Picture (cartoon, rainbow, N blue to C red):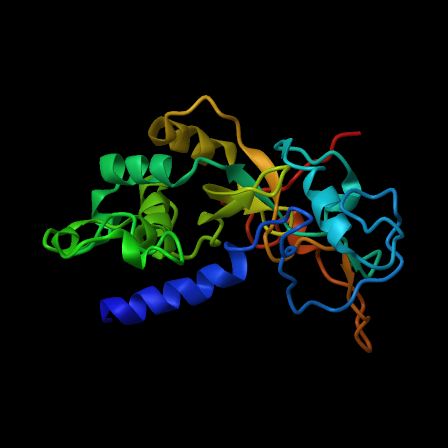
Length: 260
């Protein structure tokens, strides 16, 4: 793929999840195409203030309610329960909000084959408006490209292989943008969600040896699926196992407990 086409693709993707700040005077969180919410108990975490309609102020307010420590979730209602209710919680991602420098450090040291190289500046593609920062000389030498490496699937795949997870294991390991309580984005590594479960402790312990950090993993709101929503019942549906309970993932993912 040509460099210009690759950069265009990355910018289109970045514009949907990364470029918008969530402070009141900026654009709010992007919304997915999920069914519309209604009548969310306003006392629930991440609910709109009136329980009905999200506003720009709500986007900032719900971000301030996260992240929080795991692996347990603070309330049972944050686990999806298709058997008992059509109400679905926001997606919460479990992992570390390292920033791109730390992730590249891990990749270069432990997973060098997953690093993408380009005849371009290392930081090209991280910002939408970076074209005028560079000179022709910056394109003469092949360098690790941060943006290409972060957007590539090679690094999550290399981590899966290191942990000994087979190709049939669920896709729990992701490199993605995570927002702090003030809405600021940093790149992070996540190892599960409230819908899919999280990696078993034995794999997390092995992962610790390459992360080399004292920072504990936390629960972060997903950048796209950050709202409560409802699913209309299907005709003749008699219920199914909640995806958040780890059905079919028992060998690789733990069910998520909730604190009392």
